[in-house]
Length: 245
Image (cartoon, rainbow, N blue to C red):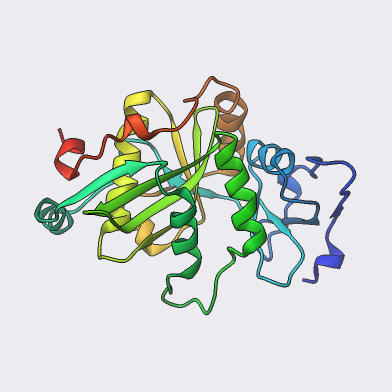
């Protein structure tokens, strides 16, 4: 469907979206187009269960799929073979020390079945602004001083909205997600949003949530006090063993 057949967002009314429930069924979750990527647009969107996703050269497209996919903190599953590999690796987990580098790698690392990336310069700049404001966070996996994997996303209230992850070494992004999951469980958070199902996330323990339930969770949890400031101290440069007890 051409974006012109969707509701067009008024750039002069930042943060004003149609109801998430009005999203299309085909393609699943497509809601609107236009608007902007300033913090007021992004904060309003995520609090309403909406996120931007578009190809370079397209207008901004906004989505709210049903069901939603993600993780309950503390339930990310690493099979025995993954755990054995991670115990052998001299990797350390940090947070918010290399946000721009994580976003850049997420944009540039090739992915199976994908010919390109949706993380264009405008998206990188937008999430960089969110990081500067304290909403954007990166979980990073280092081998020595070399960044080998990680993920980034937004924390609004007590919900983490994961945007993308990458690995330069097998299982590095799984370690980042596992460390994030265990830490958020310790903080009492209830949801890590991953937007859409994919087989890799399913193997790690992802689960679906009906959009109605997801929107209720957002209404309750995004208004709660979150974790202010950089998260560096919460991820104190430790390896896999620190997160398994």
